[in-house]
Length: 422
Image 1 (tube, rainbow, N blue to C red):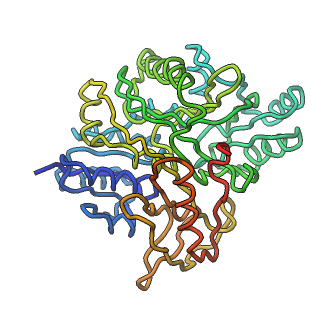
Image 2 (cartoon, rainbow, N blue to C red):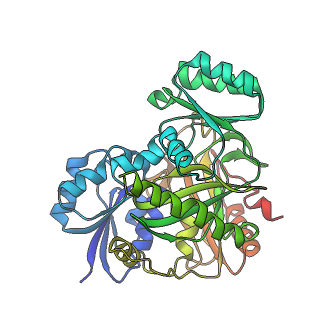
């Protein structure tokens, strides 16, 4: 009899995590709180309507169900100290403490550590005064990057091509409080040029087990235009950025950051996510996250042949297990509500076209709900179609062929995911 696993969250990332945990020989059932209607459809998975911010109710659930391992999906519960509360209750949980999650909860905190330990990143300054920030932008000129210091659901970053655009972003963040308290402080940094790469690792203190890479598409529209989103699609591997870049990034970014956190007295346990820019001078860090990336999870986990529960168990025991990956490529394309990442309508019905091959292609739901026997939209990013194939081109062809069979009223998707390969 295997153990029960609890996954905290209810989006596309958590759908993929639940699906992967359910494949483990070590796992008897996967509970997901609050979960979703789509997660309930997965064999061996059960949603439990407990909000991710109700720490005491989540602890009670884990105790009542005899949960052997908890995995926290989203960043907000991590930054709010959910892991600390689970640890105090004597429960096994894979994720960073509140102090360690500050690596994502405060961009300034992460930047200061990178500066201290010589981890390559963009030059930056931090401001809490709007007029001082504006004066700095006018001196520095554009292009320039403006970031809300706190959590903003992946939307608190503006890559400003003009000074006016940067000044407008500062006013929205610091004056209009577009992102609430996240904009009390802002980080302004040089605009790095190159290609982005998502590089994640299973980490426990000084033990670091890197995963395969993925490339995410943050901008809403084709040609990498439009506002920043939480991600409109991803693919893995990233053939033109793997190889020597990867070994270097492991040696100069992932391992040094885990070492630095331990040296600072805030050892990191969980998924360390390095958002990198591969520049002509090597890999530089754009940001660190304290959890699996979304949508990268939905293209990386389908490639993982190793047992996810066993990998986490071994990492938490202080080992660095060798991960086994399929040579196949994986592509994921997000369908989002029209208007996202701004305001959008909910409750629009949609039908899911059949996938080409259920073993190789699957829908991960991020913002949907079942209504009257069908599906309705219930969020900004609604779905992701993930496809495994022998190579990236065939994965892309199969993904878009399935998407083209659907009628997507009120939804949109980018038709140029992985355009960097062309």
